[in-house]
Length: 124
Length: 350
Image (cartoon, rainbow over all chains, first blue to last red):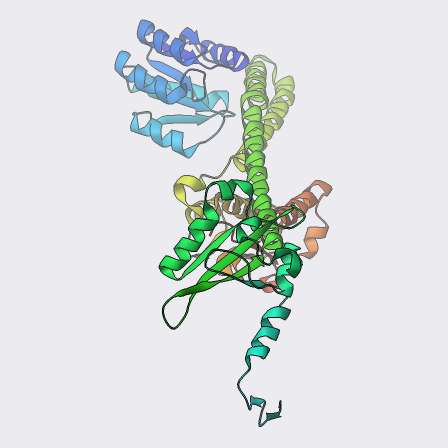
């Protein structure tokens, strides 16, 4: 079975590394790249066309909504898991209009994160 | 002969001498006459009190002497007489000069006086010293500006703290939690349980920090209006509630924020401490301002005194916010032994 490819985007170094390790620990998931700002997230998505992008909503360079819109055109088969420390109803609404359906608050358990990534990967 | 009869009715019409007495003795108004060229031909006690000149010093001089040099240079005294002649009357507010050179803020009415033959006889000039009222208005407007700045500064500071908590504290806790879970998965069961407990504590903290961010975030009153923001906030409480909102106009930004922040604090107390099943929020126009009442049917005001030390600050902060805005706040008994927080804010900007 080929593993699901995942791109991890978070501007916080500790969270980025922890996310990468949590996902890498799962044999059916493969983290193909990590990005630390919005531009890098867009570039990495275009280059790797990952099955799933784990996307922090608040990042330098325009944040999750801009990244989601750009990734939607440059790597249309990638599905996005929005990952945020703060449940801002407005940005969630914006993301939904961009076709982002999976949304996790930071503080969700590792198991919930892994399950969300798998759910998105299956539907691609 | 002067006599009064039947319920204070005057028995005679006042004489010219009576009128002169009246005008000469009024202290609160400078009342005097100008001839058609603007020279002063009468003076009264009020004019002396307000402008400082004795009658002998001022009679015969042109009334332009009361105007600041820049107004004289701009031809304002002449223009004012011309206007009075053209339309009968002129009213003006502005700086005037006393005999000692100091300025006062004057309300001036110049009335053109025509004889029965239609010929201009001169002008009646009535001047009031409005300096105190102007200073009071200035103080009030300074106070409002200060309040607006303070409310704004507070909101900016809160937003900064919220983002600091978001960008730093929460992220660190999140990464620690993820590491702990990874670690727990690699440890034998007896150690894993201890690590999982630590992780639970970390996740509890993340939840509380998220609540803190939520409370610190500025309300979006600009876009949504106060009534809607209050309604949304009530809905998030998870307690049965009513909202009655009856204001003719949207309050000013600083009043709306002050009102929202006090309600937020009061409703946080209800949620955390009151064990209430319902809460009612009423916002009405009253006494030239806005009165707000937050009533719950919980365990009552007695419990407020037993709050942990830090929570008292919530009550102090509510009262301070109301008083800084020029209003008041009181806490008393609510329905069925519950609590009522009631406050009033002056309607600045309404």
